[in-house]
Image (cartoon, rainbow, N blue to C red):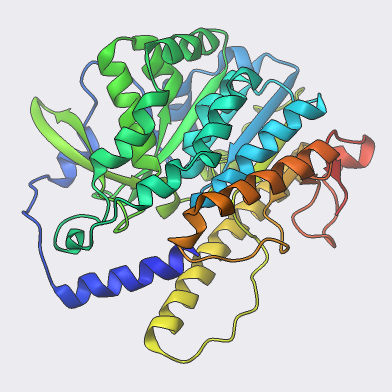
Length: 395
């Protein structure tokens, strides 16, 4: 869907051979850069556990006996599926309050409202079923091939801005003070690193500048390279202003669960806690069969699609293995094979996004949205062996 179409655009850019004005930034400046007026609001995804502690300060969460984590993946228009899952889960009546919510790409657009609970279900329903995606895609300008993207960044922010205001940030800040955490992932294209943003810490700062940064991070996380212009975030390094180029978080990691550095440097942080991980993958994990026609474009598009799907599978399986080792509850929802594949433009048609929403809603409402293993023949998580998790099927 999305990726096949992007390959065509990338090849077109190569053929065009066009260049935008050069930017000046050194590696040392990139490492030292901070967002002025905001203390400790972000950390590279590959940072040390000590750095995570410094930025996210999860002391209250660590003391909880039960911890519930929701991770929302990328997937373009597939976010309509995740929105439907949350709304159907609410109507089923057993949707929990999440202690940690993470969002990547389209999942980042859902994450703040999932974090605040079912009161915001009408908002995510509106975003994904009322034509916002179609109106954004209608902004495509192929002259953008001579610039930095087919859809200008201001169009992306205009889509996000009506849903982000000081009242929303005040509610997020209130929950942040209680120890809950909201995390959004972007990709710093200059450094090639995934950046985890502590959105609650941004919200606590308050005021118009916090609203602007919050909006910029959400827009950046959902800005698919080439299709959408990157987001430039203003930072400072040693007193020198720097524009960082941020794009879709899925460029580096399609879903944010347990960061790899915490997986490999496990120091027993989870001891004595009951942890439930809920992963909502707004895409298909099982590769669809496709006869490749042998053309350069078809080979390239299928290769890229396979590469990205493999990255999604790798993260899903790594999280599953970590969950089994630590006796976490593991609950995975993903778009099923019953949903047709569409190309990038067609998948944003409102009728198709409404069908995706209804598919997620129906499965969640009936209790079949989540499964306890990444594939049917994989063993269940060890926690699932000792108790029946809510809203899951064994398959």
